[in-house]
Length: 252
Image (cartoon, rainbow, N blue to C red; front, side, top):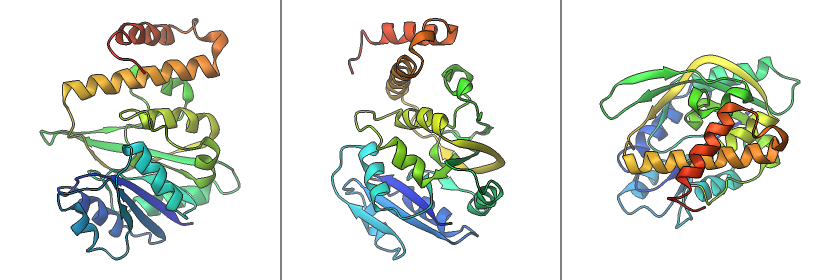
């Protein structure tokens, strides 16, 4: 099985080489690494040029979701995983993930989720363990969903079924996709830590925007998938009420 590693990038000169190296260092070697750069002018392109194994383009795009869609369109792998330009995989991650896919051979629409190490600006780190149950993912307050795409791998057919990432979301597009993956995938949990999510962006304004977007996505998803029970689940009601207040400040 071939793994497609898909990386959106823009002005990532400080971190992109670390991400590239974390793929090169994998003990499992049947992969391709595709990088869609948004027209960087900080030296990122010069780094990409040094690695002939990369498949990459550098051109203007409509944000991270657009870059992710473009990368998928270029991919040929059986298994899809997204690696942001400032994050990295642990060395044996691909081997362990492929072993898990081999273990569940015969099932369709497979998805493997793993633990994740989050590292903040102060270099403090902690490990998160995601849930395999949609009920937990529907309540963001549980913090049970995979925070970063390096901690979940899925079969190509799932992305073909779900379709493209919505380009109108810039902060919580992963959550939009995860809700749909959890509805369509056969999910297995692999007890390894796939890599490190370097959580540099702690600006209050971006955190607020991310929360607004996430809750808006949650509200729309629940109303679409569970219309008869939307007002009966207490965590959904709380999410709806919070969105109602936040929508006074932002319009989608």
